[in-house]
Length: 212
Image (cartoon, rainbow, N blue to C red):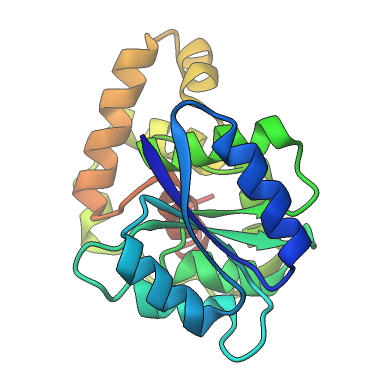
């Protein structure tokens, strides 16, 4: 069972998401909060696997709440909720460790798939949207490429570049004439070598270091 917490100041929105999530046999809402401060307390009390976190809330916003939670020893995966495609706050949250973002008007099935995907830690949420977001808000002066990148093999760099463009494992496999299992193995090794948690962080890494 995947345990989910909802942190959003709109009660009607929370009620709709709770009804949707609780309708699934493998998902369960274990807590709700209407602001970031309350959200931090609820998350620490209920220990959910995935948190759906609104960016703009009173008292403590989603950015501050997410930063607070990600300092915990075993933090949940946090997905930011926003009403804007190109939201600089979402970009800042992802740089800070959030696992991605979703538009509040996303299709119900997409939201459910996003929760499962983030819990599995195997894919980027709204990959193309994440890439567009960082293309829009990327620092005009890239950071120096860290030494860890030099440890990647030529093949791993090819896979890295495709993943950074938002391609899925299936798309990379088809393009490179590899099996999906092989691509998954490459991605796992790349993340380990670069010290990255997931593919969202890979996209961030690529943009921050001018590797796209």
